[in-house]
Length: 306
Image 1 (cartoon, rainbow, N blue to C red):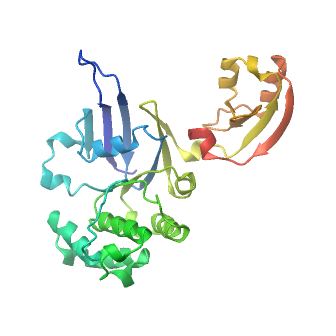
Image 2: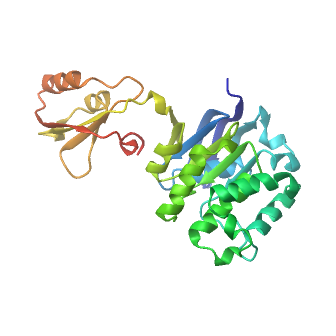
């Protein structure tokens, strides 16, 4: 059984309060979830859903209500010199590395901040640089690298610390196709991630679909947890006439979702409780809803999560 690494207990975060001290803009609302080792978690959500806030809370960059436990111990009670051994992170929208240092100098610098001897991680660093096609650039100033290479250097700096938990906030944002493929293959196949928990936020559903062992969705400040293996990989798109009077409870029970700007709906299988095609047709006909067309649709994470 995989060991529980990270536990989130009643996590809430509000940025704006009214004159009475009451929250008016809650970003995270009473989130509870446990994470185990040997997982890559895909954290999805629209802009402003709270993905970065969730990560910044977990790495102690924001104050929050509730509790965050690492190996059963509250983050609030862990001393700083111990925290740096627990997690590392690459944050979207932040300059995670120093451009006036070389690739190796960046790694050495961040290792020294954590009290890590470079000699202890030298072999791991070499492995990471080669796996991300950066070894030949190891003595190059970061400012002279492409944006894709800069991002990969940030990833190496995070993973070189060999922490049990790694948070990656939009790690492929702005990467060209080749660099993105390097990152995907690196995360999918590297042995170094055994025993680790990697939590990735991304709008790149293709990336998440390729590498995540589990997916969670932040929506309305709440966390929705669905295991990938519990999602049946089928869906249908149905064209319905006179759909303006569709009963909302019926739509919900059939897991129908309207496709924007037309009269077609998509449905999908999840957690084994999606109605069969025959039951869906029967239910629609019973409610005098005319079916204009039915077609198979390719399984799409966007249908389910966004």
